[in-house]
Length: 390
Ligand SMILES: *Cc1c(COP(=O)(O)O)cnc(C)c1O
Image (tube, rainbow, N blue to C red; front, top):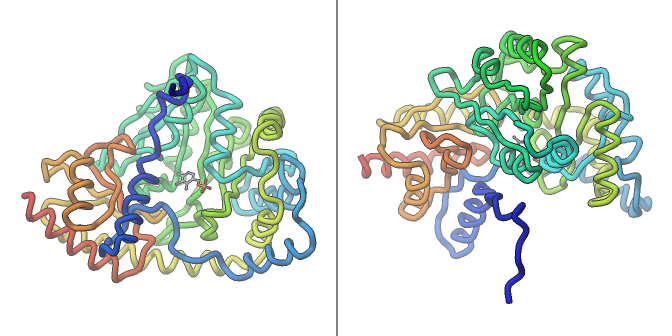
């Protein structure tokens, strides 16, 4: 007899990003020469001073249960970071430490979204947003964008998408999967629309530190006091500090929300791994040189991969301003993104993620958080593949 599953999980799609990365890893383990561009994580080790801080925390007994909302020192370090880096006047009580940025969004959505609520999600979007909204019984409302407008939504599109049922807009800049960054003026123009309505903004700022060519990131909540009062921030340590496996993120928002999230967390996960939190404290309170070093590596790879992709007849891409992804337009090849990626993996041993997973079947996502040799070899194979299907 098989167990009857809840309707809640049956309507949720498993993460295609994780599935393809796993398949590429399995092929590699079989000895196949796979070039993988599928993983959404930095290829660097966590910086030594952060690892060292955790070793010390372990040896000094930071191995017990802690407060569900996080170690007080970490909540206070995060509040300081949000004030100084982002001009967001949060206090430590406005912060809850979570098991990664993914979990902070999940906790937030579970604390706020009810059946009937609509959540605005610009596409291409991060795979988990619509699934989490569905898990909460809400309705994801997708706002499409195109390569021509740089994958940005316009204030007019936002205005038209808002209904009396809209709860919030999920605003991810820099973006996964496109690497697009809204300029400060664009952020302000969208904030005007938000303030003329009753909706909130959830700002997923996990890539805020990975920016190129002097591009500026303005936090939505830093636009004005009124906008601050309408914004919730989700962030984490995974991308900026190469700490993906640590599972450390945080949510910042109004007290009543943080209290609700704390209640939820106290009855589900409890505190995030106590000693790991000491690594996060070290990440925030030490020199930020490691972030700059990784960013410089990403910058070199970005230039290389964009040039290679744009030299392939039939493909094109918009130069990304942030994160470590490239969204390649494959519409001229005539293939659907899923066919494109499964054939590319099976025939050329190149792993990329089909755009359909992000709500845009015209593209594929490649992550350039990998070494230059893989980038060169992989783009050569991509070229072979495209010429073969043309
Ligand atoms: C990676 C990522 C996150 C959070 O990742 P965690 O590993 O859970 O901290 C959140 N949003 C986006 C868009 C991401 O790419």
